[in-house]
Amino acid sequence: MRRFLLPCLVSLMSLAACTTSKNQPVAGTAARTAPVAVMMVGGPHLAQVYKPANPNTDVLTPKRQTELEAVRNQIQRFRPDAILVEELPERQARLDSLYALYRQGRLDLNTLPGGRSEIYQLGFVLGKRLGVERIYCVNAPGGTSQSILHEGTNIKLYEEATAEHRAFGAPKMQAWESGNLSMGGLLAFVNSPALLQQLHTLVYRTPARVTDGTLKADPMVDAGFVSPHYVGAEFTSVIYNRDLKIYSNIVTTQLATRKTRLLTIIGARHIGSLQGMFRTDPAYQVVEASKYLKP
Figure 1 (cartoon, rainbow, N blue to C red):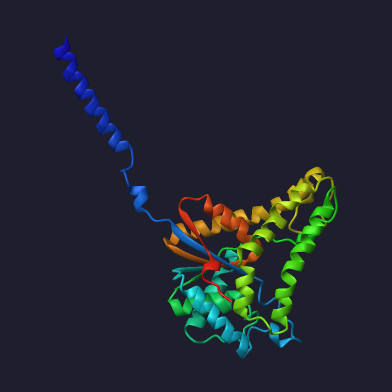
Figure 2 (figure 1 turned 90 degrees about the vertical axis):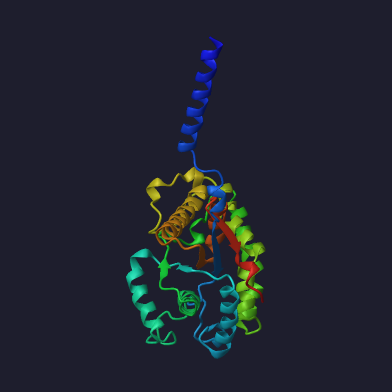
């Protein structure tokens, strides 16, 4: 009997090993697949901070263009093979047309309506220089003002955090508007871990402490689904929902293009949230812009 059982056991073990090897991935396959590098450069929207009466706020002046060139040189060191911007996907065809004209030397950003935007000043210029064939639109609808959270229990905590954030950033913006801070200095500050963490806490943490209130009327918020008791959490959920959609647009763009080094140019408010999503996604590696942007 023992002579009979031993060959059978050996055969069964061999069969099991064969079956296991067919159904499981080859060891080391995942380890050999390097994660996709994603770097997000945030900032104030350059077209929005422009004040016609103050030339220091005009990124089209020779001085600011020289400073922007230094910033572009710093970002270029990341060596992105894809550039993604805060523009809605339904406007992709328009952006494609403008970018094609720009690459052909037939589009002057100085005369383009909205040409001060970081989409053009950073995205288009860097894209042409790097030979990137397309600038991808990855924004999502849902933008709203942080001021719509305006009443409720513990609202003072949110108001104080808002005032603290403004006081933290005001000196830098004032220095930039007076011409005493360069574009590099401004963007290095906006992308600093300290500023991004404070902004993330203001938008994604502090509001949860506010309860039993209402939100100001906003076309992007369906008031019928807002629970007054969780008004602060409801406010954050509106912003976070948009970030989830932006994250989806980024990762699906990467899946479609198979690019491996993504530069995303976006408002600073989104960065803390998006970095959190990407840091829990093993397919990606977050590269902080602060490693490249220097005053």
